[in-house]
Length: 623
Image 1: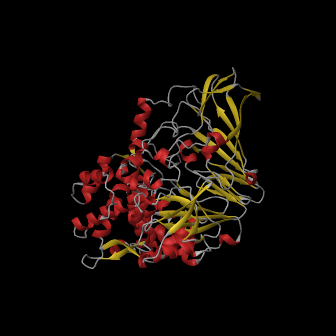
Image 2: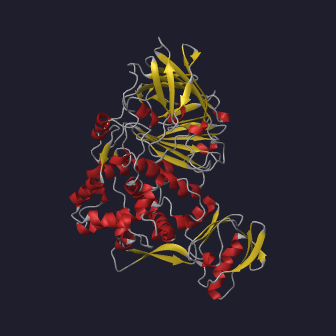
Image 3: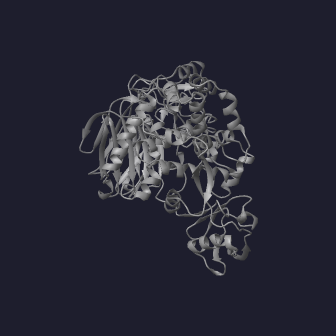
């Protein structure tokens, strides 16, 4: 069933837009799309489209602004072998001079359709940056928008597609799209709108398993080995509780059924993206077999699940567009992503994916990381959301001074504070749970889009608890304070502190990220080989003139090792030296760090003078 178009979307269509305008009349027939993934093992996809049209000028669009990716991320450079035919004969085409995602052609007289053929080549393993289609020798995951073009002239909710998929021999596939028929080589899907098609990625592979969690809910696993599909009863039970806890939190569900996709491969880097009726998640191959990897990655699945309500169903009005070509305004990502981060972490704790201690350890990591974002003294939170389309692809060097897309962790703290205020203002009678049921709970058991503005968000909060929410939230998103918003932590009965040994969650992050994180102490983040990834402005490493890209060769005149550096940092508390031999390109220099405070790692400490509201927040709610 096509997604329900919102009132705002209808108004946009009536008013006209830059890319939805009068064009060739489309036939009532759906566009036929066949994706041949039989070459997926060598990272090559073939697509064939049959597009009903009238003779004359025709403009075809390749999707550019992809929902959930918050930027013009349509991978145009990876589309190759593009051809247009009519009656089996080639049709000349040209790319638009200004809009590179638009293709113009002239449909010859007598033609009722054009055929478009294209290949898509996803990046190879190890490619950095945003990679939304990936494949290994045993599995693949792709999004339909990478494999298609569509005619300019109608909204994405009005254009129908009849999609089909051909698979490598021995592979199976899963997607949220209803299946019309199945053969030994693939599937044909029920006709659906372009909007729904693009919202329904495909996970396929030689080793694929669908694990039922609750009626109409599945955890769908694909892995590079059969052994990696093993899932413990505890993990399965936690995800079943996640479904129940989300149902209790929101009251209703904005989907017909839901699939948690999880691709398990060391050849497909971690990646997570939300959709209305599924989420696309990719993690290391041994994630279900390794407790550390579970702590590091499985909590992201509740985040993406929450997006079905917050981001897909309830969406900032500036992010609702009639097609995939118009730019979106990302100013409210501190709600779209920030609130989702809080609710996702909350549900991870309530369902047992995390323990309460792990939630608190993650909160400490987030708060300390934000305190190290010295860019917050010149860039307010709201600017990180406005600039998100470029900041997502920003380099990792000087990241603490640049300040990137930290509206996820900032949102975690910001919305914890909102939750604490709601509880305190109502003397425990209301909480973020009540806000979620009011704000997100009008879903009718199927995908729909209900846009909102900042003022409507404020009104919904005020309906739960009278408070000057507009002033409070405006101050939070426009502030240039060097300190993160710790009001929720403190109102919750805890305080951010440091300790001399890292928490287990800290060790997990270091291990899975393959990093040495000394940002809390000397302000240094390193790769495993001693290369400096980043430094924290105004800390000891910065004062010693160390910079990203340099490499530590020796510590206190001994050959570098991570343990040796940690020991030297710890030893400074007793007056020990901290001298680093640093390589900078072809040059070497010994630098002395002026630091005497020993090892420092973030932690939350209980404040007995304040009731433990945070522990109450984390309690499970579902029966």
